[in-house]
Image (cartoon, rainbow, N blue to C red; front, side, top):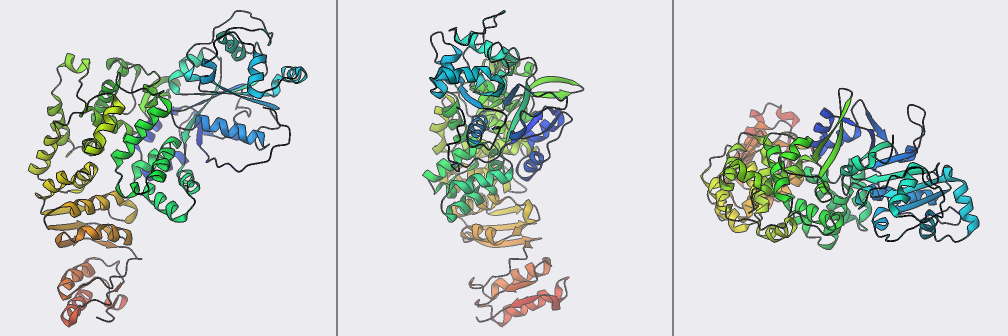
Length: 620
């Protein structure tokens, strides 16, 4: 494609991706894998490590610290992170004279998928003809004579089904027809178009193959969307403001989902699903989202493959890693489980170059801790056991499930895997998961989960309710809730530390229960949104108690709530223990004189002077 000056700029939306030069140090990479939510955003905004720094698309071909302008730039990252997207963005922006237009006169996009389809011998001249429909020999002469003004965007090196065939010497004639393997070697080695520039995208698992083709390419890793860009993606994806607001709030409330939305493909999956089924916002669980992520990733990047041949091995690696809080794996770790990171595995296992003590080494990780936790949970529901499991005479799957349940009570890092395990047993998810992984899913151990919940005495039921919510199995929830007449919900103090998903889980479980409950909220912040979420569930509460309940400054209105004098004793407790509550509107409630007397007593018992606080009774 050559810029002719005739194109009209069409405003196509491209959100910026975060990129980094060089390699992470080991500690920085482990921290990145573990963090989620706000901490993940802070990590992306402050790229760390002695040998890595922020990279910018506009500067990919700028001189490095040594003053050398790179001829070959390798853009690496896991599936769905935005490599092809970046190539398309470069092509579009160059065509509209917004990027590289002074540096490159010609830009050609070469898809490795399409290169695989070439069956016969072919010349570079023919390749260029097919790419830009150029027939004029005069134009060919211009291009071939100005190779320093050419940029090739070679997308998907990891998808090549062959290696470029190294040729000693070799002809530099661009009109000579050769096998595609030799043609690529000539282009990569500079024997054809010796001064052209190359930008190559690849998944990390193909980096070793790529290194055989180039001496010193410049490596850039795509990290994904920053928090601001994740929001902007969804903001630009909807035409009406109501859909924008509800979707963005939905994404932000789930910190795991928000973290995974650093991967543009995840944003695409969520946007597509929500546009097709708007009611999903009200019903979708974290497990649902990760199932959709895995299945859609296989469909889009796995050439229709399933995980059947490798799933059990990968799940066992994930499970053992979660138990031992291990998120970076050496090559020998993969050897133990018989794993080879080929095309399908590389959708989920990312190859990483780690800098350590002035040396580099290759490690592997799941794209995020939460994805590893999902595959760890999947291990417990697979029917088929791996050969390594039989050789080592490991405990039965039921025994391992019981061990996970018990250990999760004293090891909080197992809680996410536990939550996914409950979600995988959802009737709705069983068929989709089985088709995705190419294995039957065992439901025979679901009774173990229910039995454990019923007989176990939990100090705090937060995790229990969130696990129940993941199942979306109303009968299952109802049976377990019938054994939980008293429920303690422990908050995390200030609003910014609260987990909105907990509010949703509490309300859902209370609504599905057939008995009344006494619920105690401790160290909990009640925002207007929290009240709105919990309100339907409160109808199933015989009594609500509060300990160190925190109100927001904006939460000041309880008018028209059908409060009576009997409610004032509890309100008095709230006033006494929450000095942050300065104003409270109780108008249009039937409090009567006895109720008001209780409230006045509460004001005098409070640590804050009564004159600095205001109750509005208004009309009854």
